[in-house]
Length: 308
Ligand code: ATP
Image 1 (cartoon, rainbow, N blue to C red):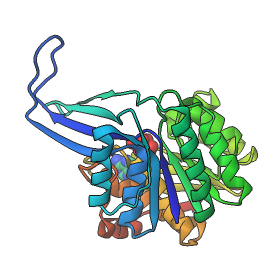
Image 2: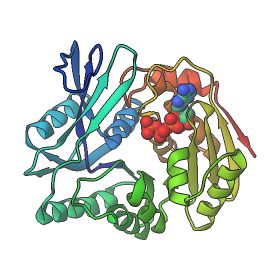
Image 3: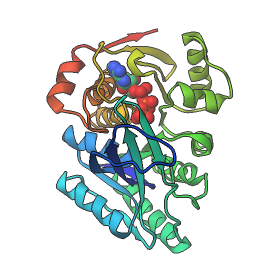
């Protein structure tokens, strides 16, 4: 089983409106509510690919109930810790000029007892899983070393931990040496404190991260594909040119494809191909964190992975 940790899920509310004017009443033409959070996107894509996954984290209030219902509707196995405070909502305002303005709530406070319950559940799930994925932010009063602690627990029992987060959570997580990290260019600059200009700069930083003990580093570069460091080798992934509809969540889809490839025992090359194809397939959809299996299968034929 693949366990996916999503500590700070949200109801993602997408509004379509003509324009945004400060201080005015704005009437939305449409509103669309979906279960959101980077881990939930990973779980959705891995489930679509036919893998046995379970998503966990914190859910509370009516918003939490909504997310649980949506996950069940999509047959995504879930086992969240129920908390007193309500799960957050995040708003995306899409105006006629097709720009997107986002308002992200910080997330609920979680009590010490709720945190302890989650960590107990995590220990149980680590035993049952071969791969653990943790994606995204955490509720506001969770300590920034939570992923680092979870990585140490997984590593002790030989389980692979894939970490896709940002900021302090990623910096502390790296210290615990997860199996994989997947920064984009911006996140790589943040964790290394260096300004990235060229491919050479990226490869140098990948090398440093591999050297400190992170086995697989994927730096995703949107339509330019990815650069990868794995067990002393470097790879360049090229993706086909597409007319992107919504690339948000492509990184999550890539992580899902990677986890599925590892779970199935694919070679590193085939794992990277599946991962990149999922990223590109997500960019072709309006829905965030969603792919069509037949589209992924078609794109797989068009991905190029070369050893550098
Ligand atoms: P998010 O945080 O929204 O999940 P990200 O910044 O982590 O995204 P990206 O680098 O944008 O991730 O995309 C991940 C992968 O998805 C890319 O490496 C590529 O394989 C694929 N991809 C993304 N955008 C495009 C695009 N416009 N055309 C083709 N492939 C794309």
